[in-house]
Every structure is written in C-alpha cells, then in structure tokens.
Image (tube, rainbow, N blue to C red; front, side, top):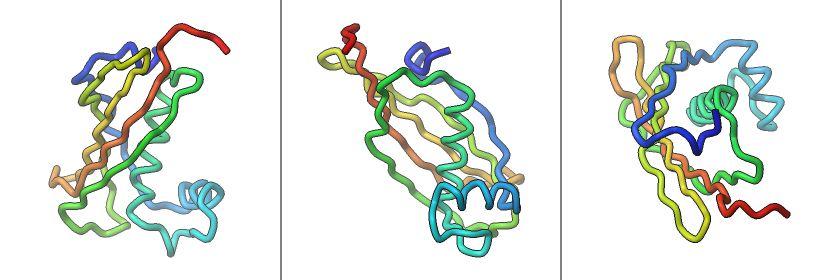
Length: 129
C-alpha cells in the first residue's frame, strides 16, 4: 500500500537491527569510507528507514525533505536495537502531501535510546509530467 494511504498514528515494525558483518557490508556500499569498525549511530536511522521503504510503496516523485535525530541514551553497537516507525502527521498544501514519520529506537529491555523524525513530500496534484 502507498504511504499516502496510511493514516496518522499508523505504526510499523518493530524492526530488529544489528551491527553485523552482512549489514555492515551493505551499509558500506551505500556510505563510502564506512565499515563495521566505523559506523555511526546514523546506521540505525538509514537502516530502519530502508526497511520501512521496503514494506511500503513510496509514490513516484516522493522526496525525503529532512531528518532530525535525538539520542537520549548511549548504547553499545553490539546490542540489538528495535526500531518502531509511526506516521505522526500528514498535511496537504497546494496539492502536496507532507508526511512525518517518527522512529523510536529501543534496546531489548525497552529502554528508549532515541528517536528520529523524517519528512516526506508527495506531489498529490494528480498532474502527470
């Protein structure tokens, strides 16, 4: 289903994330000069957002406008992290839909480690180029 068809408050996941060799190799292909010994916490953001995009249909021409992150607690990169995305707002202006997605990151004891918020812009005017 297309992301624009989900309602505000819809939750996805949780997604289980690990810093392992396989994911490190995939991440390193996308982000140059990174390997398993040099991943930042942004690995969690890009990986969880990538899993979300595999789960949904992203409308053609959608644009990722911005990204914010707030880390609350430190974590060890060998621990399993659980990412839980949620659509927190949808608004429409002049034929454009703005969708905000918050992803909370927790460890297996459910302690909140941080959260990120992404905004996606979808042109919903019905016009085709």
